[in-house]
Length: 225
Image (cartoon, rainbow, N blue to C red):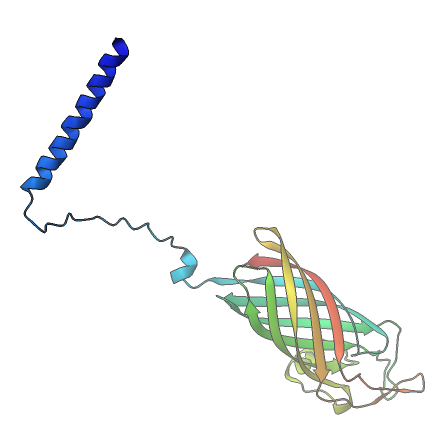
């Protein structure tokens, strides 16, 4: 008996609701269309959408390669860079030495074969991935002296013809994040010498750079992305 009463009450409620809806529809003028409200989800906004992304920092890199000097080449480079959005510009000062010691024959004092080089890089740096790619130009001196005036001369390329290093090329790298402002940066580069002048060595043979210098480097980078 109780269940029948509940069923009767529910049916009565549905009948009243349907009757009210029908009466409301009858009161509307013919052809009336009920307005609909479109709800648009808010678009996510990121600072990178509107504000240019600036960054910069410095990197100390251990160098290894072949081609610029006899045998296996090793060295170190200190570079500073600045970036805007997905473009960056970098200037590095590096010192390369060969696996073995070579002494220049025509030098009045003992001058060992090595490469002091300024490298200018410019290219693309992804904002969403730790990837970079660039073109480079280099100027420097083979068998340079260690005084500061020599370093300035190498920067502008004012060195003796047979000791001059001038090259162009490119490379790519991966910067693995270690912390908010620290990255482990691995690179691969190829530099093609524009000038290749033989140089006499004390060992009784001439040295001439190879047609291309290939490098694989690893460094620690500090700075803002």
